[in-house]
Amino acid sequence: MSANQFKSPVIRWIDHRLPVFSMLHHTAHDYPTPKNLNYMWNFGSLAGLSLAIMIVTGIVLAMSYTAHVDYAFSSVERIMRDVNHGWMIRYIHMNTASFFFIVVYLHMFRGLYYGSYKAPRELLWILGVVIFLLMMATAFMGYVLPWGQMSFWGATVITNLFSAIPYVGESIVTLLWGGFSVDNATLNRFFSLHYLMPFIIAGVVVLHIVALHRFGSNNPIGIDTRGPQDTISFHPYYTIKDVFGIAVFLLLLAVVVFFFPNAMGHPDNYIPANAMQTPAHIVPEWYFLPFYAILRAVPDKLGGVLLMFGAIAVLFILPWLDKSPVRSARFRPLFRIFFWVFFANAIALGYLGGKPAEGIYVILSRVATAWYFIHFLIILPVLGMFETTKPLPKSIAEPVLGGFSSTPEQAYAAPRRS
Amino acid sequence: MVKPDTNKKSASGDAKDPGRRDFIVVATYAMAGLGAAAVAWPLIDQLNPAADTLALANIEVDISKIAVGQSITVKWRGKPVFIRHRTADEIARANATDVADLRDPQVDIARAEKPEYLVLVGVCTHLGCVPLGQKTGEVKGDYDGWFCPCHGSHYDTSGRIRKGPAPTNLEVPPYDFLSDTVIRIG
Image (tube, rainbow over all chains, first blue to last red; front, side):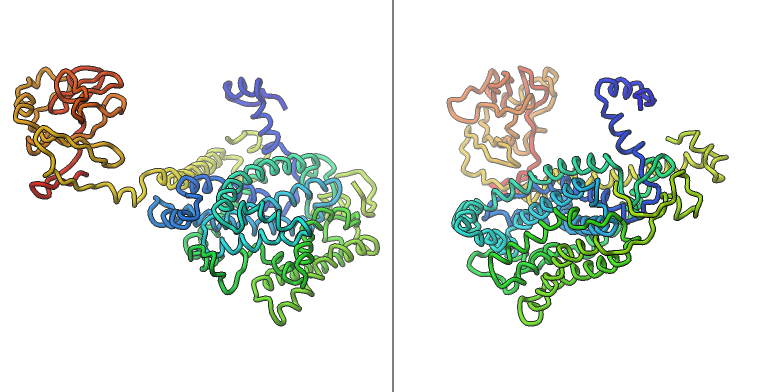
């Protein structure tokens, strides 16, 4: 790829000295992409778009927000009532946070289903889990900023998780608070970090993309591309497909922002924070509910906290838990069933996390929590050893074109490691 | 935008008519541009004064306590407003000035609704400093009005620029008399 291909002499001049245009061209234009990607491969670009929307609207909101316990709530209300288009910008920020999680969860389930975490993409997957963790921290701190009742008590409960750590727990919580309870110092540092972390996420996203482009995207049949006959250039084929996904995404976002802006929020957060009174029923934002359910399922404080963090930690070692050499669930009949059971179980955990911690809900939460870990720690390793997989196609083209494979290799269907 | 070779390779009927493709591409970019502009506008417009800021855009001032020859400074929209209860001599000198000689020609009557009270935005029209001349003992400049210490602009008893770099007279804010003793600025 030479710089000469750019028509504009100005771009050629710059690119010769600073090859940003070549880099962009290489990354988003020529980049060879498997030609069989389905719409489940749209969620990466949608997550990137969500991050961009969050950063832009967030910077704008910060211009009118005051991070002080006496002013935070009113400054948010001022944004809603007085700042030009402030209501819309805040509702976009609020709801894009939810959409960001929806998109990222779908992106992760896509990775789980098609085995995108397997060699040689382990680091790509791990970087994704890092992004997910950073997102959760950012979202949590952002939710504290309006300083409503849910902000305050959410902050209190989540920071108190660290008090479960033996011996040093209390000191760590005091350190996090900068005082003896969630107060002004806490709000100030949360605002500072909430502003910082999206840029760290953006940095990890760049690493995520670098790792992705090392071996290219996985694909629905999970076999490696073998050359130009299996790929098409990213632009215009996948740019246009991504743009279509973006249009659908923005349409849904607009429906929620303009017609149901508070549907995914909690009314209690429109009550100013009151350190003297806890709301009757505290729930985190919906995207934390599955993990919240795991936390509450364990009748031991430290155990609950450990399992909750363990639920994410297990994702880090997933590439080494699932030893099956076949990536895509299409060729793993048993895994496919267990995947959908796991999916339903995850939804169930989310449902249970939003219910009061009493009666049948506690028992169901325990079963679902157990299943979450059984899936990763027992089922996946066992399936990797004993599952009989279906024969893999010889090439990406084969399932479409029948036997007319474009590769001269022997049609041996045994699973292969790359 | 459209590469000719793409068209040749294409098996669709569009290949014979690249103009149709160009139209679709241009229309797509145009729609995307419109969408981007529609999104950009609220993000830019939020920088403009908010509703509560605009709500504080008017102030009422009681001028009955200002003695003849005295000036007061009030804050309006974050800026100083000078209200001077002018002496008969000051009014006479403002009227006696030959308008044709002025850099920014304006008669005194056009600058003061009631000649006794001169209301001015106390911001030098050069680069925004606050001119001196409000308090007793401050330099009032060569024309006995106001003097801007930043770059030496002299204003007369009608607040008109007479000497120095400022391009125009001190601005007269919109105001009206609610009664003989109360004015509303803004």
